[in-house]
Image 1 (cartoon, rainbow, N blue to C red):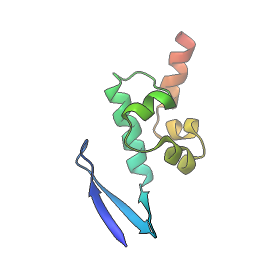
Image 2: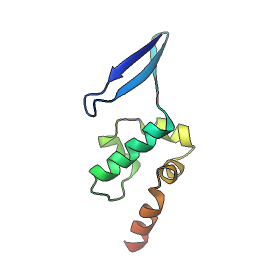
Image 3: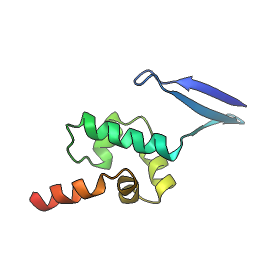
Image 4: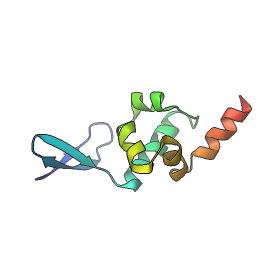
Amino acid sequence: MVAKKTTKKTGKTVVAKKTGTKVVQKYTNAQIVAELRRVFVENNEQPFSRRSYEEVGLISKTTIENRFGSWTDALKEARLYNRFVKARKAA
């Protein structure tokens, strides 16, 4: 069974697949990257940690890490990693 759900924060529709009693949400890589970029903009284009992402992000950080292999690889895919490295070096 496939269900569609509209999130309250963004109004975007997310597809979820119901397997038994567990609902598994399916996100595309593009949706995950867009969410990382949205949080970056919401954070005044400043680097953010996994912990701070969890406070405002709509997609689980575990889902992101599982999809891309690591948090760093997800940031690289979203083209945010270099900005974070520069910010760390400046600090």
